[in-house]
Length: 337
Image 1 (cartoon, rainbow, N blue to C red):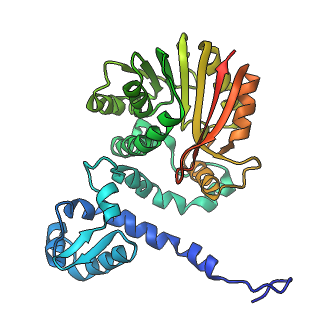
Image 2: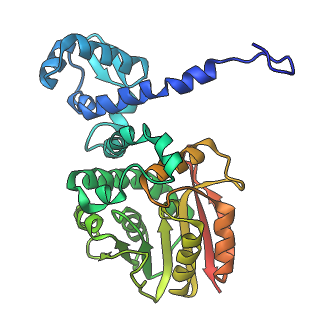
Image 3: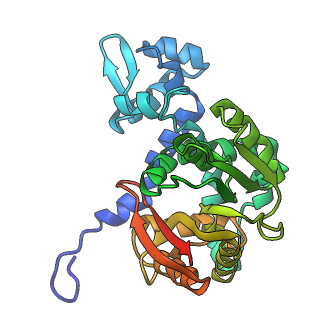
């Protein structure tokens, strides 16, 4: 079919979009069934894997073939095996493990089916309280999922932001405390305080202990909307927070954070941001929909707007920088005059 200019239109893009969930659910299901961990020590025959999983042999074979087609698994002479990608990122205990983050995506799968209702109502379809402390298991998936993601994101962040010589960091809405942990591990003499909701803070304390930083990263249970921020900070980090808030709340958070900084202190704001106008890049726009579904004021902001809010708060030397590809994140920094 041709458009009005005579150019030929290909409907394949629409078909690929309409069936994209097939591949997503294949990955989510294989992760949920712990197939990748079962294959951590090497290949297994299909019947042995079916027995280990308690799965129907024919049905499992169909799933395994789809996983091979998606480069998640491989066929070998000794049976089915993890691909190099799965071995690196989907086996528990490996440095790049992302299974908990993918498990959180699994928890959101049904919620995305209610996107039409969210658009009609302008309201989330998953109550934030469920994964922020109300439901223990879902909260654990969320916090450990954040931790898995933050390990990768945080390693990129600490390569972009130098806190050398700074002594006190305030990490607002710091989730599992992963960013603070990475910063104090890299920066001699740095201590951090992480302000986070009590239900999340309890699980975060486990993670900080496992990372060996509990003596220099302190959890402060509270709500960043209402809890007074401690002052005397050489640096303040707001990472992965603004996508939960309206523009007005973001502006207020930045002003409050800037007020706690000592002269020369650094404000660091990291998140998934759009370009000016909000229509690109595509991942950021879709991320905005995910936040619409899961937070009352969820959405996505442009990094140019964040720069403006920092300037309004009296910060200078404002810089915007993208994370290394393929990460969709960006960081905005400013200095207290």
